[in-house]
Image (cartoon, rainbow, N blue to C red; front, side, top):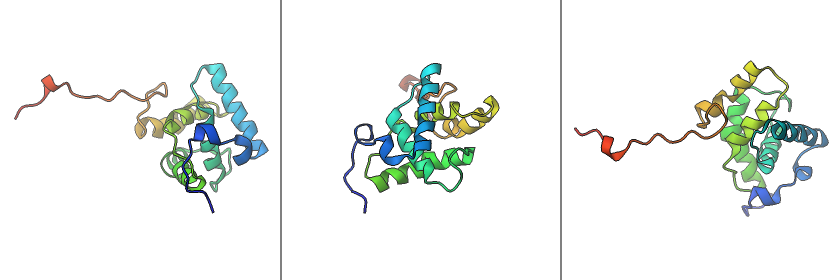
Length: 142
């Protein structure tokens, strides 16, 4: 049975405890790629995403826009609940960096990142879009 105590993922999840050797090598590749390209990445959130991905039915290194969408909205949340940790807030941004490190074409990366742009509100640089709020002086008066 999993603990119901919620912990901060940045201080409690060790990759060696939740990822296989192969998955940790992939994690290291992603971190190195993001560091080299200057792409922001939260290492602990990456661990959570990869742990959730490892529990999916498709092969670990097989990625589709559907898998990205399901990880984003379902699998990461379920993994966190099952493991007693808070769902991290920077999953979309970290996933953006992860997808950029995949050994696929630029066109495939754009396709994989589409759910992050369309549904998670990231801009073309993988950052959250500023909320477009109407200034009170521009309010429509009926």
